[in-house]
Image (tube, rainbow, N blue to C red; front, side, top):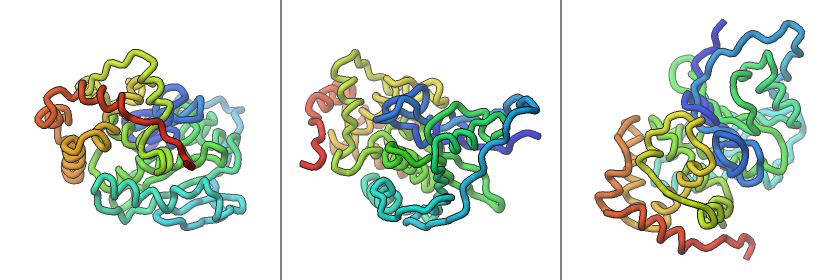
Length: 305
């Protein structure tokens, strides 16, 4: 029986958004700061081959407890410490994202499924008989699925670990954007998730991205980036570039900031408003040079100081 239509946000362009997505490490998909595997952006789901009959069943979806935190409902099978600092993004991130981008708040509830261990998470997501077995293994995912009666259900899947806060910030950024916009271009989705994946005191600076750009070859090409619609088309350099363009527009130039905010407003009603680069060139004739100058001036954040 074929799987229902899915929108994957962590690794492809159908719409499964990975919570890992946007972070700095890991193969394909979003990059993460502290991980060697991460989710990807939007992906097209496909039907996997039937597993062998002796394959063990996947783990059950957590759901013994439901805890409301801000705009999220957390489903978990263990006792949850409501004061756990890793859960801070559940209540604070929406105000930061919508306020920064000048977007209206959403009424949509985001479902967050928290597994107690990595093993249970991976068995539920990627085991031979699992619902999402066709997806590449990632530390977290954001997935949208059609809701009976219309609209989409926004779901985040991940497990409790040291990476949790960064992954939640990254994947919830995807969810918050898709809650109020008709669509989000892949490069912009990942660039914004990279901007917001660290706490506010970082001011959108991703130290690993910045260091890699400054020490390695960096040849930005936004026109090329805007053509991508599959996560597998993006590698680490593309994730870094997506973050760099977003940081430049939000922190490097008031006119570029307005271009980005206007573009996001257009996406509220139009899923395909065209490329952003021509709009940026209309106010900044040489955006590549302006980007390079901005990145040369960005200071590394010093949290706690």
